[in-house]
Length: 438
Image 1 (tube, rainbow, N blue to C red):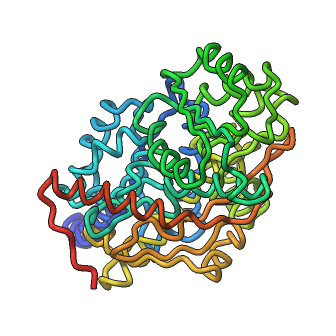
Image 2 (cartoon, rainbow, N blue to C red):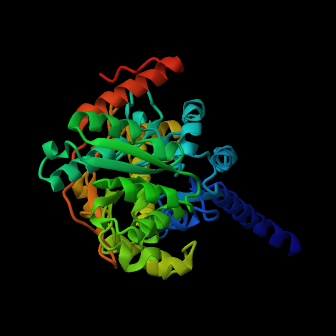
Image 3 (cartoon, rainbow, N blue to C red):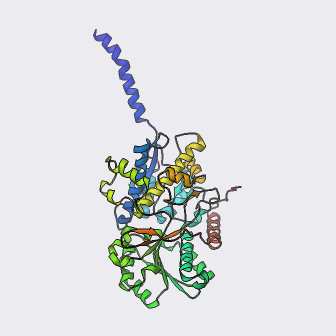
């Protein structure tokens, strides 16, 4: 009796064990999250990190992952510190089944990871930041910076200014100043603006602000003295808030003050109160929570208790939240593309690179994703890792952001020449033979 019972239960135990082993070994897509929820830039790092993570959680909870494969998000705190960011990369690249993409969320970190990407065969998507000349896919095989770059943005903002002045010929004799974060990030648009100043005859001047950007009195005293017609700003974190407050204190007209898209969030304008009304910034996607994807995130992520930061529910739809969400959307669509190309659900970094380089997100696909009109369609090629490079201008009305302009084409003549020059110089310095994309 006892023997028979044992014989009958052994197969059940074996089956249960096999099931447990199978569950433990279930393949997951490993997606590192380079967060900075601490440090002086945390107010801007947190909404991006939440948008990025919430989108992956949505795919897991609503769709069961991507084509049935769950996503494992691996957070690592960089504190927006380059050294710490590189350490995060080294810690996370081999986690789980191996990282398949990185979104460094820092130009400084991106510069350090560029040479590592080709060795480790893990693509970098520095979305709208990083090294602009990485747009040249012939030389930067593993780096992507779509849908637009800093140089394209600088030229688009100058086009907007020209339009406001009554034509690009009216820029002659005008003064356009750049207030910039004194780092690799802040210095990115300088050469573009210098070239555009030569082309259109305006006076350019750059005013550096040291990290973290709380001390700007001398900068704004100089602006009050020199009276520039327009100010552009490449700032981040507390620097943005301080600059807008200082601009208000000298009564600089907010409708002539334009920030880069990293200087155009709710965190940047709210501390200045009503004085920030009319302030402008670049944009490549819509602000606000008026899209189906936001409703799905509330339902499947927040209301089901799956959010990393449950207290953030009321802030879903903020500019930087939407940016993190957009980054995750692009990456997830590249995963789908990689699976389709290779006919496999287990995606490696190399496969992911292929998925990124042939990525096409159409208007129809954006609608299917619950993001109709959220941003513009994107198509990436071997030669072009930037994509369309389109940039709009958004305005703060005291309560919310709204896009107020068309999407401007970058000045291809200026930006294209700079990308060619810088990327070819990089290739020569690093003994890289450009790929034949034909």
